[in-house]
Image (cartoon, rainbow, N blue to C red; front, side, top):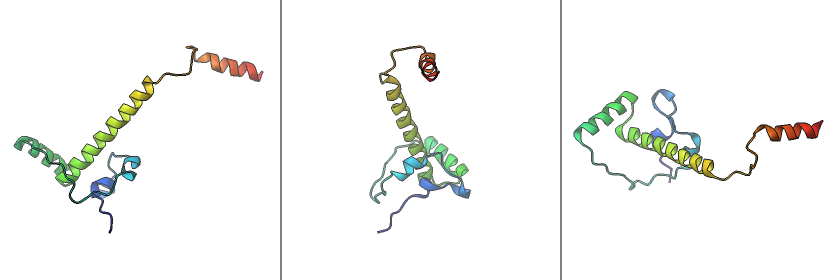
Length: 108
């Protein structure tokens, strides 16, 4: 059975690439035809989304999917960066020049 991948995952109209990185697209599972997300939107919200999709030259589905995946990737990246920043470091010396000075002393 061939794998169906929505157009928004790989290309935008006119050959441009979406903001989504390669790493996200490579790990996406093949979508199932019965998977869906239902949204309740006001008429105004739907109009805004339709207009934005039209300006991008995409269908509403492609626009929403690409936008949500872009935001999800950003949130995951920010979460990973926050975890990395909160991780304890091995450095007991607060002066960043000291390791460099020690290396230079060892070489001379």
